Image 1 (cartoon, rainbow, N blue to C red):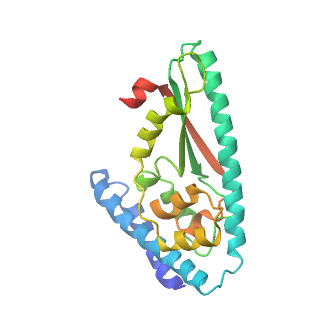
Image 2 (cartoon, helix red, strand yellow):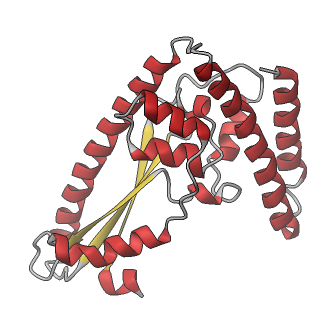
Image 3 (cartoon, rainbow, N blue to C red):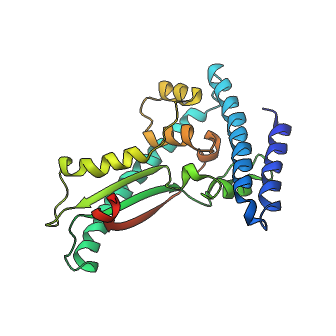
Amino acid sequence: MDYLTLNKLEKDILNLYEDGKPFYNQMEYRREGLGALLARRKELLDSEMLRNIRKNDYCGFLSSVKSFNEDLKGFIEDASHNAWEALIFVAGHELKGQYEDTILTLKCFLDESPEGLSKKNNYGENIWDILNNSEYHPQYQDGFYQDDFLIGLYGEAASEEESSAYKAELESKKNQKPEKALTKELFNLIPELIDPIRFLLDNTYFALQDFLFCKKFRVEMDVQNWVEFSS
C-alpha cells in the first residue's frame, strides 16, 4: 500500500471539505469533487485488499469479515423485530386504532462514531464523518439496509401479495451498481455474506477496511400511511 498517496488523497478530501464550508452556493461543485476523491480513496484501499486476497495473503482479515457479517446479521434481525414491535405500538396507541395501511420504514446505518476505527493515519475520524454525511454521500442517505413493515386495514400484518406493491416500489428506488471485483472475490470465499455487505462494497464510498472495524450500528424509523408512501 502506498500510504503517502493515501495520506495525500485524504488530506485533499479534508481540505476541500473544510475550505468549502462557507460557500454553500458551491455545494454541487463540492459534492462532485468530494465524490470523485472519496471514490478514488475507496478504489485505492479496495484494490490493495483485492491484491492481497489474490496472493492468498489474508493477514487474518477473513475472520474479521466473518465476524462483521455475523454482527451485522444479528443487528438486522434485532432491528427488524424492534421495528415490527414499534409499528404495532404506534398503530395501536398513537394512531388510536386508525391504522389503515400504516407503514414503518426501517433504515440501518453504520455507527457515526464506531469503536475500533482504523487509525493508520491522522485523518481516520474526519474521513468517517464525511462518509457518514449524506450531503456528500447521497448513495448512503438511506443506509446500507432498508425494509418496510405494513399493517393493513384491520391491524393485521400484510400478506405477501398485499406487500408486493410497496416492496416493488422499494426495489425500484435502488440504484444497484455492477458487482465489483473485490465483492465477487469475497462472496466466493465467504458465501454466507449477507447482501448489505454487497451494498456497502458496490454502492457506497466506504472501503472494506472502513466498515470492517465498525462494532456498532444505528437505526432510523419512519411511520406513514400507504397512500402517502405510494404517491
